[in-house]
Length: 119
Image (cartoon, rainbow, N blue to C red):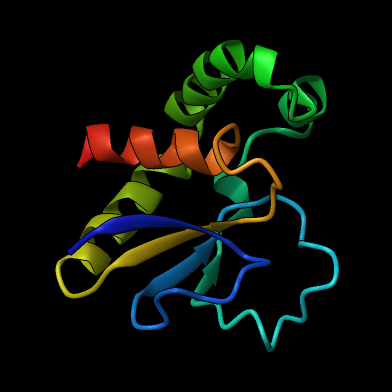
């Protein structure tokens, strides 16, 4: 099975996978019913301080990547999250959902890379 990324504001491309919102804040304008999530894993998202510092500025993305991966390494929830993703991938795709407009420079891209290295 495959680990995928999808912007929550776009029409779902794959409704058959395990859908996880990986943002700390709920995306504006999205109803919890229509999101069709299996899980909202806000504890795995970047800290408020790191998110505010990054401010979705592409030139900060390399440093953001390093800092977020360091947060993931120190986060007590990471091992459980990796285990959950690993278990789900045995039977279905896992879709990491995010709200950022920039589909290249966001925490979900970093998290997917982090997970791929851990799986």
